[in-house]
Length: 497
Image (cartoon, rainbow, N blue to C red):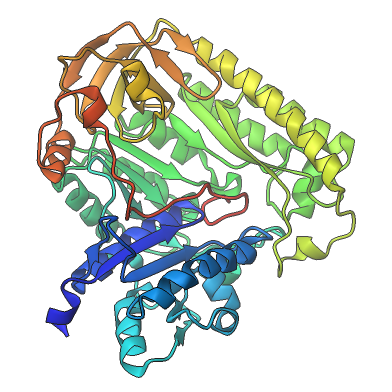
């Protein structure tokens, strides 16, 4: 079996939130550990895995459409296998195999480690394998992984969610919150740093509720401080916290731990306390704004971002105005804004007061216009400031034309910066640049690179690509064929608490 499998290739297509991206790295690692190779783009992969999301009303239509498009390819390649996992698989279970009988494997959110075995069983038995577990079989971070980034890593600290938001189906699909032990988290983080990562994002569906399972209300702030003691770890981020669990000790840990970045992504969802109650969100407008105020007092230059849902059932114009008022007061650096979408199986889907599409669209456009004007104003305040940027790959679509590279500032703002032809800069390296322009969604730094600091991450990137890059047009050429395909996270998704 090993010899036969050695030349088999795979492709993972990822939809949804950060937790799915993290799971896809595990799925890739599991397949490679089982002898598969990542597809290089010279033909269809032997195994195509869909890691699905279920938080959108039309998620199933999108999946079945993609499966339908792939069927002729499979018919022409009889040895090809298709697997469907993730939240939609957990929700629909046997329905996927019934509606798309050419699918070989269906697995859920709790048993991603079973994928190689299920693929082999489907091949031998020549019939679809559907295996859905009701509880987590093993923590995802204990599995092998194929990290997509040389410089940044996800470290999952918990899975599942104990909240009961009326718009969200995730707790039904991911289960109750389960926390990892601090020692395991820190050991994995040190391993990521030893492998070259300079940035780690702590990941959980409700990340700052960490510790509830073992009864330590300050476990998350302690974890942040412990990350500050890891040599070589330059940037620590986390996503997404819930306002209910956002305590002062977390703010203190953020402000007092040098490598915890001055950035906070905290979902608002609505500025109306009445709608927040209907959403079953356990905070109100005043509580949210109080957290924003405290964070800004402790970290004046922190960038605060959020998620907002427009058009929740029963939302009035007055409720929507409350949301606009919070946006004006909080002055978010950016916001992920979504039009409410029914999630079958959630209480909100059955609520009275479902709003007409045209009303939701009009409110959405007003919200986006307001937030973009605030983002542009806030970014313009950074003109003239020097920033240390972690160079990234694939974030600037027009970089080759404009001879720019891209990266992230400490507060996670995207920065496009000009480079000289003879400057060698690799993804994962740090550069110091001066901001020359602030746009709504990014900063421009065209005054030249002030300094370059080579990092172990840059060394790892160069080793992966088998070369030192020669020019900007080459150094950030990121291969996309065979890479996990990622789509934006939807409101109410796994990490959108």
